[in-house]
Image (cartoon, rainbow over all chains, first blue to last red):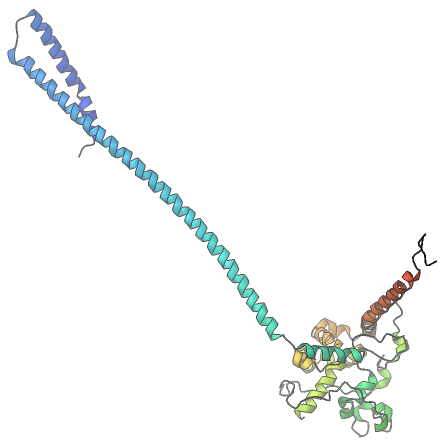
Length: 251
Length: 127
């Protein structure tokens, strides 16, 4: 199958033959002037050939015109295609953007849900908080009494006396000789105060419900908590709450 | 040990940890180097949960308990100087709000003294 171009080139390539025809015709016409009809059929033949050539050219021109039209249409369609392509790309960009925004929104919503859950888990009734705040403030456990001066035995932690009068203190005070290193008969060293003098420090809860139990540990530690009795008190430094030694005037 | 007693003894013990002198006492006797004791300290962290924490009278103990989880802290507590320093800082912190309140009260008292003078007008008919 030959392209229009190829055909044109081939035909034009034959222009030498076309030119030859023309030259021959002109020569013949020139001769026919001077002579009387040298070859009767030849000029007709050449003319016919020329006419034929002309027809062929005409046809080719028509084909070229049609192809030109087709080419134009093709260009129009290509432009359309380009436009659609750019539309699609634009849409793609927008979708990507939307996806990004949505992903961010979803992530933030999840974070919010997490913090809501966390807040819900940690929610405590205001009444309980107020009760607790009162409990720790009224006893001066977290805020010093306004009239506190160095020398005041009160502290933000259980003092010696409180420790010894607590359950642990009593547990450790077993009446036996030389128990835990302190001499028998030294009731003070043993931490056993006469009951009437035992101050009741309200740091053991009186409202412990039976349901309140410490988490199970199954005796993994193999150790009883150290006693609060004054074993080897002599070499215990600063165990007592001798307030003069802990004066904090250095403000 | 019955559970209720165990609860009470652990409650008392964990609060004793608020006392830096007691911590020094424990450190000097080597308790803070003892592996079972260290495990016990970790176990005691349950007092941080609200349903247990509400029984604490001395909340400072929770901070001490957290610090005690660190080996470095446990080692330092052997020094009496360290315990004394902690004690001093703890007391200063304890007094922080009282000092603030006292200052506020003083400021309020000063403020109330100031606008006692009546305004002087030139053409006051009351004079």
